[in-house]
Image 1 (cartoon, rainbow, N blue to C red):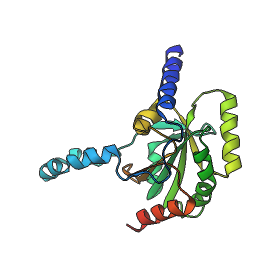
Image 2 (cartoon, one colour):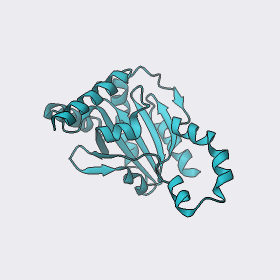
Image 3 (spheres, rainbow, N blue to C red):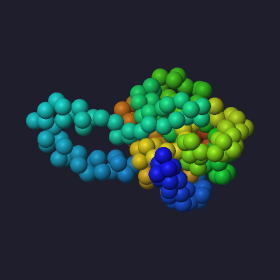
Length: 207
């Protein structure tokens, strides 16, 4: 148990040290994730082999790109299976010390309630509050969520979540758009206003 606690502390230190504290410009976007770039570089080879691939290999190739197990603010278990609940999931990585993160959360809270849940869902990841961490940190994060009206699921940082999705995150806020199969469609670094987010969401849903 002690070793696990030390490992989580080291993980938390690594992540918070790598986040450049809201230093990203609001309009800076990254249209493709690193995983998708790698996938594209292999697409020709995969296409040539696909016709002769056994069914088991095909199923493995179409498995979710993101796999994790985590907890939300209420202690409920949440896994990467949550992506199957909607055609599009927006995952917003934020921190309690990040003013741009907090400034966009009221708009995100509104967006979370404006779409059919089968089409769109929104998930927050609190990058500086660890699962099983101090109660004071949890209470502070909960108060910020209430103040900003960000009434949607928020996950706490743990090793599984970090390894599954956050290894490439270098600044907060960072936002991922993920399809129902767990594939990253887009990554946005920096905060945007509600109308800009709405335009991106509608664009994905119309595809």
